[in-house]
Image (cartoon, rainbow, N blue to C red):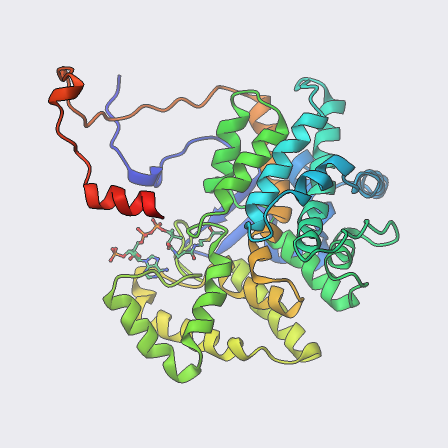
Length: 393
Ligand code: ACO
């Protein structure tokens, strides 16, 4: 076997070949199927972009109409899924609720025919259609309200905001939300996509694939960072506090949320577009107090960490946009998941087309040939005070 250097986090190690998206982290370029993200944000919409990602090319007018129609038709949830949600604790995180509901879909659509194009199409349609309904339903139910049924007259993004806020959204707000979904739809082989691909490679069902990816996206180093950005801006509290907050973080070697990226060493192109969207919303609906803090923080981080290639990532400005759209902070990551389902499904399809189960190797660092010690002769390896505190918790 050839010797391979061990790289923590698999940094820089190709784990697959893919034709879905392309990133140039030095130049700040992101393309879906070869089309620049700026162009898609300007000229496309989320469902057309999803079609492009999943089926590999832009749809014709009729193909797009059919796709939109199918998705519109499948937006409703089975009442049993709603009943299941009613049993979730209100204090539970919506990402956990979403992961459970996505996995539960597999119970209702249990036929697994991965070589049948009709099965693939139905799974794609169902997941794209139902994930937003799940997110909105959980939000209303945890407030003690009945979920709002999808509105057939509204398109994908407007319908989500309608189900969430129980009223038809402003046109600009719905458009901006749709652009946000397009921006978050795909991003090469990041942690959640990798998770989806590993799960897909076992030939399990697509609902399990998406559920595993949702669980991975939830972490604060990945999709969960957009929530943490708002908490951080809240903590900073004023423009005057920005530099002392940053000094303190750097001294403690704490990460500044919404900054840094494994691939981008310049400002993330999606952060540039999101900042512009935030400004459009502020112009129409009033400025967000946190925006000035965010801009000052970006300048300060650039001065102190720009030489390390630490710049705003996609999560830095997205939270400010979502706040202005009336989306609660702990729904930011579920909203990210609504968009990223498109990318996960594209990678699921690509994985199936040339599947080999993922089974990397490891470098063993433990002991060998250890003897089995009878229980009465063993000494505890755990700190007893720590265990007692854990039990008391
Ligand atoms: N704040 C301060 N310093 C940072 C940050 C940050 N946000 N990110 C990286 N650095 C520094 C590290 O301290 C390290 O410095 P050193 O070389 O002096 O030790 C160097 O930059 C490299 O950092 P790593 O953590 O090794 O970079 P990695 O590629 O492993 O991590 C990650 C990338 C996880 C995104 C990291 O930048 C981070 O934790 N950022 C904050 C969380 C965040 O915003 N996540 C969202 C990412 S986008 C997404 O997932 C959708």
